[in-house]
Each structure stands twice: as structure tokens, then as C-alpha cells.
Amino acid sequence: MILAVDTSLGSAVALLDADGRALADASSPDPLGHAEVIGTLLQRALADAGNEEVTHVVAGMGPGPFTGLRIGIATARAFALGRGIPVVPVPSHFAPALAVIQADAPETPFAIVTDARRREVAISLFDGLDADGIPNLVEPTVLVPRIDADDRLRGIHSIEVATLDAAALGRVGIRAARGGRELTGPEPLYLRQPDVTVPGAPKRVS
Image 1: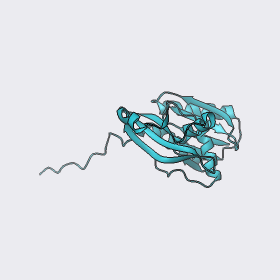
Image 2 (image 1 turned 90 degrees about the vertical axis):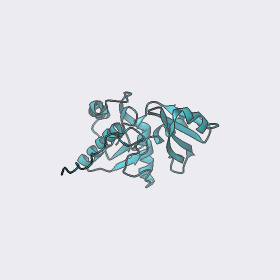
Image 3 (image 1 turned 120 degrees about the horizontal axis):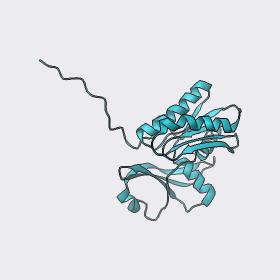
Image 4 (image 1 turned 45 degrees about the vertical axis):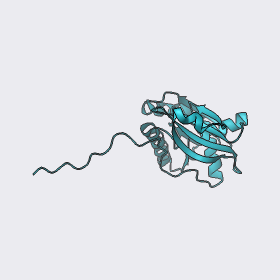
């Protein structure tokens, strides 16, 4: 059984069998309050899925806001560490890309767009599926002022996503693990660095 966790938009948790069939899922669309809900969502999904052994944890790595994204990744890593199982990092935009391809067979290439707040959007460009059944990323995620998004996406079919399906994220992770693929590294794909910084050393007083 595979556990998938993502907090790049709202908070989402899913459990899947080895074939990618969703056994349980729980989510909250609230873009805030990840720390308050993620534990409850995880407990609910585990209870609904039954007592099968979890073998992998798929972690959504963003793009997403600094604090919210860290909560989901920390949850995935802590669960994996406690069970002694591997974490499969997956860029979060791959989940809606897979869902769109399987549901709509959109014109290609196509863009996945998510709200980045501060009047900006995050855009990733995909073109079909590769040989492993993973969405083919042709342009990495970029942060664009919302006012400029239409010009940047002119002539490209675009889908703006407000929530993320953790089951779709898990399916991407399963296919990546089977293919021996590493879709991203261990560092989160933050939309921007936090506003709070570590203060410098205090000035010396003579």
C-alpha cells in the first residue's frame, strides 16, 4: 500500500494499492491550517484503508508556499522514518497533469496553473505521457505575475487547479518508483523563500 501526502494547495492524503487503485482519501481545501488538519486526515485515511502494510510514501514537493509545503513533506518523511520505508518525492503539478490527461486527453502541450498568492501564478508545461506513464514535463515550473499569465500562455491550453488529488500524486509516485525514476530531488519547490530571515550578529558596542 502506498501513502501519498500533499500540502501544496490544501491538504490531501490518499492510500493506494500497488496497482494505483485508491483505497482511501481525505482532504481539506483550506489553503491554510495544514498543521491543524494533516494528522486527522492521515488517521482517517489509514482507518478507511484497513490494516495493509504501507511500503512507500509519496511526498508532494510543490510548488507551494513555504510553511504549508514543509508541513506535508515533514509528515511524509516522519511517517516513512517511523516505518523504515522510502519516500518518493514528486513535484505536485504532476498530479493534476496526470488527472487531466486521463480524463480529458487535452491538446498538447498544456499548462497546469496554480495560484501562488501575491497576484502571481505557478505554471508548469506538460506534453502527454512518457514511456513510464508519467506526465512529460517540457518546461519546469515558473512563477509569473497573474496579469502576465495570459500573454505567457497564449495559444497553450491551460488548466488552473485549486485543489490537488493525492491519489493522482500517488499514481505518479508508483510509476516513478517502478521505473527507477527520480522526478525531483529532496529539496521542496518553494514558490518563494520565507519573509522571515535569521537576524545577523548583533553590532558590537564600543
